[in-house]
Length: 611
Ligand code: ADP
Ligand code: MG
Image 1: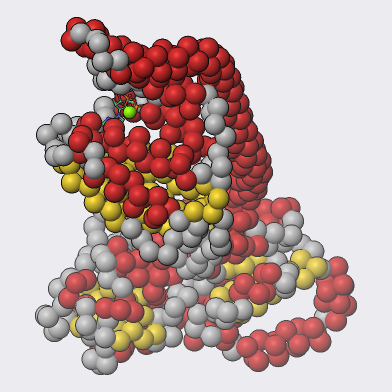
Image 2: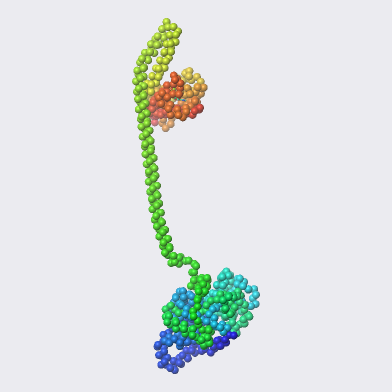
């Protein structure tokens, strides 16, 4: 059963002021030895997490300090009680040489300030030593509405302290493992300050449930404060290798460690460890500390794990990557990536610039190429034209020469033929033969006239002319012709045309040529329309028929001299080439549009002298 002496010892221990009086009296009694001892000894401070206040802390651990002072010559050990929020600062500032604190506080000191455990506490439980402990999540025995962790949702809950490992963090981890977020899922979460206060709050029904170190109930029961059957531990754990004898709801963790500060010498730490491990179970020192002494340091990895899972100090940022942490952690990669990006940027910039230059060069080259093609084309055309016109000029000169030579004898032949024909004594046969001679000779004469026209033997005699007058005259002339019997000739004249500088006879000759062709294209009759209009200061005259039309391949040839589709003896092929020459001589143009089967329209455009 529980060792009653352990708690009875408390009453026997002198209170703090009394202790000072005793020490003072001892110093007075033998001043020399005390002085000598004080001068030699180096003071060593042991910081202790005082979970129940500084007084209880000194009561509990004062004897241990005295024990160490006595065991280790040359050193004087003193206890410094520290609150939860003072522990870290005291270690950081080097105000303590050793620190005795709970496991979660220890792993934080280990991580932040390089503290290292030298021994682990052996807790005394039911007369036996334990180096492990756990927490209980409990309710009052009569609250049968709470069976497991899930039933805690919506209930009020009390724990010891946010920084308490056995009095809160162990249970929190277990709750989190079962997807219960205390702050969200409990209707209220309070902290009682001490383990006893939590037990009392549940006992009095001030909260629905709570958590404390699992051995709290037995201790309080021993102290006569509670009865064990008043409480029920929920979510009870029974692991295979879990030999903790009291009911508990969480995993097991190593007991409190005593750690040395980073700068404390190994030599001193070794001495302290050896001395502490040598404390006998039944010594007054052990009894004051309510422990079973100390053992070799345990592994605190499970505590690290717990804090990591809870994401609390020193792992508050664990798993979260803040901007700064990312930069610190991955800066070589980030720098590399930035470098690669920069190089890629520079390269693409250059590529883009090169591309643009290339495009510009290409389009310039394309433009030059097109320009050159145009130049070559126009050169080729102008050469072709020159050759053409030289050829035409040569043909013209030849024709003119031949025409002259033929014209004189022909005139003689015609004149004499007419004279002979007038004679009375000719017989019928001779008359017929002469008529034939005259007819054929007249035809030859006409061809010669055409040749002379083509060779532009007759220079134009230009004068200001109203084209409408010429058109009216021509229509009148055509109306009297036998050939135009089946053709309706109409004029559509725009009044007030500007005058053109032209040779009236030549313009009339063109109109007659175009009209005769039109008439010959309308074998079965049709309509011939001659119209005039003015456009951009130029006078245009169109001769349109409803005849057979001109095929596409003939369109390219009709202006050539001697081109004709008419039977031998009918056409000379000179009408259009002569007309073309005349219009060109007037600085105008002659165009044709035709559709086979529907008709043809010739348009001559003459520049006007008026503005
Ligand atoms: P010709 O009338 O002696 O044949 P032209 O130089 O006057 O010579 O005409 C050349 C050719 O153009 C004609 O043979 C004919 O094929 C074609 N032509 C000219 N005008 C017309 C027209 N209005 N309709 C159809 N064909 C035409
Ligand atoms: Mg003709």
